[in-house]
Image (cartoon, rainbow, N blue to C red; front, side, top):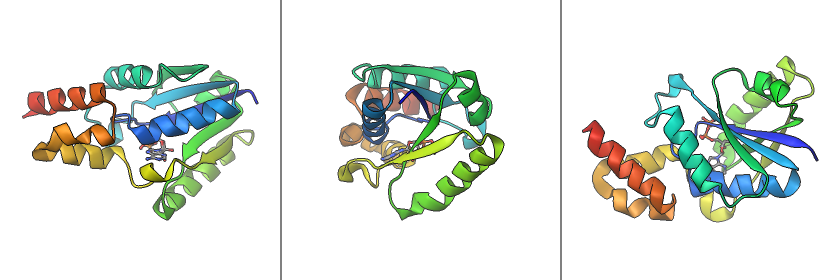
Length: 163
Ligand code: ADP
C-alpha cells in the first residue's frame, strides 16, 4: 500500500497517537503525520512545538514523516499523492464526528479513503484534552502513563509559563 496521511492536532502527542502511527506504518509504505495548525481548537502548544514533539515521539517508527499543514486535509492528500487518511477510533463516542469527517472528505475528494485503526485497549479512553486537564490541575508528574517523559516535561514547562 502506498502513502497514507495521519492528520491530527496532537496537542500534545500521546501514547494513543503513537500506537496508531505504529499500526499504520505496518500497513502503508509511507505514513505522513500531519500536524494541523487548528487555531479553532485553541491549542496549548504552537504548531512548531507540536511538530517537534510528534517527530521525537515517532522517531522510532519506520518510514514516517512529520509535517505541519494549515489547509484542508483533502488538499494535503492531493499534494502528497496519498491514497488514505488514517484516523484512530476509540470508544463509540468518536464515531459520529469521524463519520462526518470521513464522508465530508470523500465528498470533497472521492479517492480519499479513510482507514480507521483501533488502538491497544489501554489507550481507548486516552485523549490529549484529558492529559492537559490532569497536568493543569497540578498532577503533571503523573501523566507519564499517557505521554512520553519529554512530552510531560514540555507540558509542565508550558503550563508554568502560562500561569
Ligand atoms: P483531531 O483534532 O483531528 O481529532 P487529535 O490529535 O485529537 O486530532 O487526534 C488525531 C487522531 O488520533 C484522531 O484520529 C484520533 O481519533 C486519534 N487518536 C487520538 N488519541 C487516540 C487514542 N488514545 N487511541 C486511538 N486513536 C487516538
